[in-house]
Image (cartoon, rainbow, N blue to C red; front, side, top):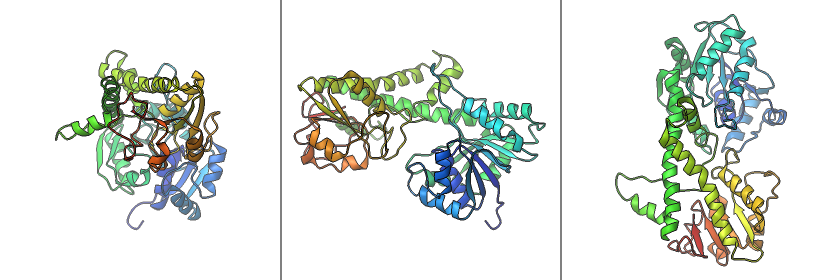
Length: 422
């Protein structure tokens, strides 16, 4: 890294965001101390392998371990920069649960020194970065100004994380101008996208607004798909035609909304402003939360036409070609179908080794045994299924996995026995 400062960086949380971030930092010449509480994940990383599915991540982790620039530990180590990449879930009342952030902030306190930089990457409600600064003040003799604090939310797409960590524009919001500058100087060592400076509360809210906007747009598409069912109209064909308008861009519907961002972040806004004060965002959440239950009813209706139906559910992750099950609507649908006891349920999910207590089967076994095919996630492997293999099946496609099959009539009514586009 000739001409660029090399930092000691402590990345707290080596999950779907933390590990790719740590691996990229190591590849740029920084010395990275990763913190991961799961022993098996630590051991996997320290043997040079990734414990999550992400293109090229194994190679980058192996390179970091072999160069001795990356190592996973159980506890934080003294560093120049501390990056917090821990979960920020919602609790049973759909309020932000910041306990992981609090514990991560407290855990680094014994290792902080004058001039260090603390970066919160976890998506968080407005005011969280300032809360971290207060925690450091309470647990050390350091004060803001002695240590810099900033929020720099990740904005990456699973399946393309390594590219986007480097090339996406990055929001950088410090608690003060000095913190913003310190964070900018650090991100300039590996980010090629534009670095956008603002206050930490603006940065925190920006990420929430981005995901709430996506949730609203997806809700419109999901509501359209349910309306189309009433009119015996193919929603995918309708959206394709409507999108011919130069200023219309309707998204594709699915079986719901999942993942740790879009399905969760809108609640941070709702919680922050109070229920009833963000009616559009709240309505979008209701629509998207309802969609899995609507799909279940479609499957029940199809199953009621058979004496002993065997139902194959294709996909359980929250989006195609990843192994992330967090907030997955497909997983919710599978669990509801199992609980409904309407028939034998088979689950095909090539990206995970296990799923709750559901036995996983191959595509071939599902093809042989199932009467009803329910496509919940558009994995590449599913899109390769030959049309002839679906010819005698009842097909409910919630994700467009069969739209490339000329053997299936896309114009078939959604309520038909032949093909339901849900």
